Amino acid sequence: MSRRYIVGLDNGGTANKFTVMDRSGGYLIDELIELPSRVTEGPAAALGALQEAFDAALSTAGIDRADVLAVGFDSPGPASADGVLSSKGATNFGHPDWSGFDYRAALERTLGLPVVYSNDTNAAALYAHHRHFGAVAAERSSAAAIVGTGLGGGIIHEGRMVRGAAGMAGELGHVQIPTAGLLADGQPTPRCNCGFTGDAESFASLTGIRNNLLPYWLAQYPDHELHDVDIADAATAVRSLGERGDEMALKIFEQQAAALGRLFTIVSNVVDPDVYFIGGGVLEAAPHFREWFLTRVRHHTDLRAEQADVAAILEVTDLDMAGCRGAAVAALSALGH
Image (tube, rainbow, N blue to C red; front, top):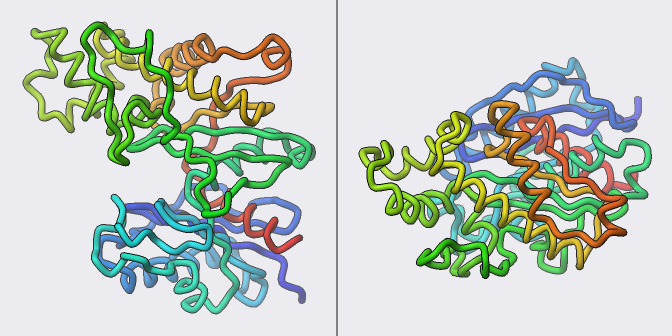
């Protein structure tokens, strides 16, 4: 029997997720299942955990290993296009043995199968694209911004992920945006952990809230309840306050929406995509707040009339499974099937 399945593995800072996809793009696993990723323990433990996730995927889908064509694998960056982790380390890969580690090749040796690597947010962007466009995915383009601890992104052109020469294409979080009219009176220009000032991630991310937006806005609201909360916990609490209509929280999210709108305005003049996707924790909220935030991003995105007639700004759906599913799509595409 010919090999006809792709296993998708999404490797996160705390959990691994998995799926199985057939050559026609159908998924054999509907439910979200998470297993510990063990990345903080170093490469050996993490590779063992990925082996367990691979075995669990086969068991859950009810297929044999002999039927697997390849593995689509994604992880957080920074990493090269071929899955070699940065020598400078990363938030999720703090163990010293991760420095410069060839993650893709190591997993390929562990599993004994071809492994195709993708950045995690690139994979999520690819899944969002294919899920939305379906049969015409190869005729369309999209850009995605995934708002989480940082701001990841992805550019999809004619159904394929744009990787770039060094594998760093689609890093929308580190696009510097104009801040005139975006910052409040006396508000310092936000600084990103990457060293840039005024990039999209310095506004639109949990880290941006904690390091930049929340300290400024708390100073404007001296009696706010979050003054008595640890800054990391306070940053996490801002979303729930926004859902309840808290004035300060809404000012923070208005700035995030404006930053994303300015980012998409820049993208519109570089890529001119059919769809701009937004995903991440900022949209994992009550429906009324989610729709308010999307509406504000649309308001702040300055498209030309011709673009506005044909483009849309939409939410990434199924985000919990988007990484492993997108990694599978990338693998199938790379293998030419």
